[in-house]
Length: 370
Image (cartoon, rainbow, N blue to C red; front, side, top):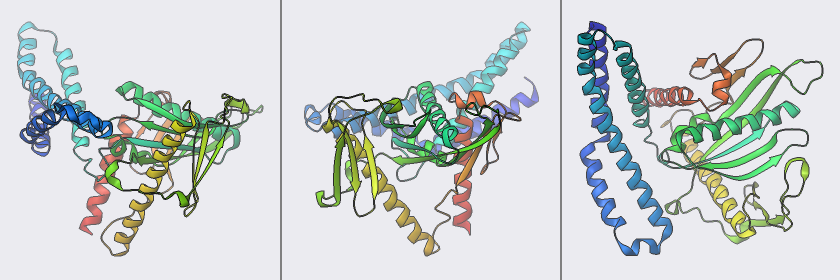
């Protein structure tokens, strides 16, 4: 086995050992036994929401254990695979590919160990709004929505669309949707901010270059333990008829719901469910998520004022997507960039998520050391 290969395998082993210490397989096994005992209780489903939390956590912990075990076995098999390839005189390229795949998976798992924030393990609500740039910005907002839904599909995560407000000519004014899965908020929270697109406008008959913006907001899904109470006196509820692209009616009843939180002025709409009751329930979830995030930001601001934390804001413009005169997507915080925007816009954003999480960790550490 080549010296460089041996060194690389040794480094991968050290990284995996660190991950195993952080994740603590023994504690995970204990948690599985505890959750299995709760899941076997016939009375569990008397509270469907609590039952869903138990079964979801059980699946997540079991999947984490399987991942650790599989990676450890694959890593231990690598030296044997290299020896066999040397004896047979071929196949080393395939083993190199397996080593690269293992490195990628170990690095991805290492990133998940960095997600230890209060809400990181939760599912995520994404709000996308078109910004400056007219019809191009509305089209850009729709492209971003597709990028995140494609990312979710590739990873097997379910997406529920709560509301889409279509623009008149093309694209969307705004969209609200939930991505279901463990650690969705922890991963996707690094996407919050303004996303800039530079391209030749398909809506300009003179084929001029256009810069447009869209804003991405990421919120943690609210759970029962959050105690986000909204008195009826603080809430205005309006109902109206759902509409689709171009303003066309997609529902013959007033099933769409608009909630206005009077003290803060926060407005949330939902029109994609079939009934007014379902739309109101979905809109309440988003409103509670927004109020939870507002509460978190206020608490963070108080900590910052006392000198106990770093910057609470990520800044505004955080990533540029350039389609003309050259091809590039670059994160302006981490300097991570790729030269194939089409793959990124088709949901290949894992590299940006990983670099964003590592950047956030380094910023937090620097703030603590200051």
